[in-house]
Structure formats: C-alpha cells, structure tokens
Length: 217
Image (tube, one colour):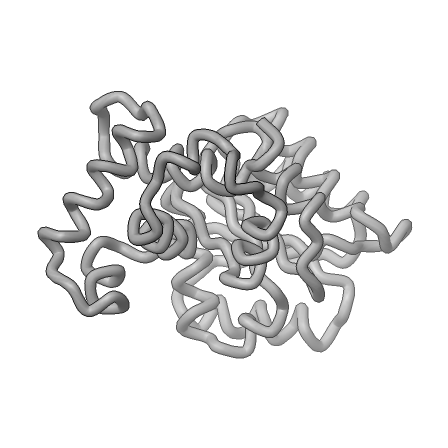
C-alpha cells in the first residue's frame, strides 16, 4: 500500500515513515511543505495520504487545503489528517464532499502504533477513522432538535459514535457488552432513520457516519 506522508517536523516525519514501513507500507513520498505535498499527491498516485493540517509556508491550514484540492482532482482519495488539537472547522470541511476514505486523528494517537496503523488501513479501504475527541466536540455543536439525528435513541447514537470511530459490529458489541445481533439491529434502525436505502452495508456505514458528523449540511 503506497502512502504519501506530509509532516513538517523532521523527527515525527521520520518516525512515521519508519513505523509505516515496519507494518508493510510503501512510502511513495515523505514531504514537509504544502507545495511538495501538492506535487507528491499529483505524481505518486498514493493509496492513502497522511497529512498534517498545518504545513509550511503558511502554517495555517496548508495541509488540509492540499488534501481538499487532491480529493477534488481525484474524488475519494483516502486522506487521514493529523492535528495537534481538535479543530471543528477542519473536521467539517474534510467531511463536506460526502465521500468516504477520511480520517481525523489527534497527534497523540500516533504514539499508539497499532491504533494508528489500523486507522491508516481503514481510511485506505474507504472507511472512516475519527478521533473520539473530535466526535465529542462535534456533538456539542448539535442541538436536541437537529434532524435526522433527533430520531435516534440514546443507544443508537452510542452505536453510531463507535461506528464513527471505525469500529466493526463485533468491536461495538464488545465495547457495549451486548450481542452482535443486538448491534446489527441497532445499525439497521440507524440506517432506516437516516434514510439510507438498502445497499452495500460498508457504504451505508460511511454515509451514516458522514450524516452524523457533518453538522452543517
């Protein structure tokens, strides 16, 4: 699996390269600036991009803007964004195109190798990997009357939150200490209440997560 990595801090960038290589990833490019990232994404055709939000030369949202431009040029390009803090605007902007293959992790998660690598793989496969703190902060912006989430029961919202973290039905069942059959029923109810037509369940999971997280649409 080919990865383009963008991180301006040399030690972190070098550490991520070594970590990903140790887990069998091929590093197509490892860059430190926005312009370098733009070129790498255009030339390398990676399977997934791992990108710091803030890159030179602006140190504002350079990395995110490069990622958004790349996804416009190549719809569905899997992108895992790394950030030092939860920045809701960036999380919402990343979700705005309605496609899967997206992730938003705080840099603290990078120090858990297995968790980080699992997130990269899930995003590359077209799924989602949203940091729990990002999810919680997005949730605080929603009012009780928001639709369609208002139709979900507290348990269904709990299941959907774990789904947004990228958990499988098996993982959700273990977390909530219930049966997989119960989780399957909850997910079916979630899909119905969010108006997601019968289709491939992996696709519906992504769409459900997007409906859950993208609060401005």
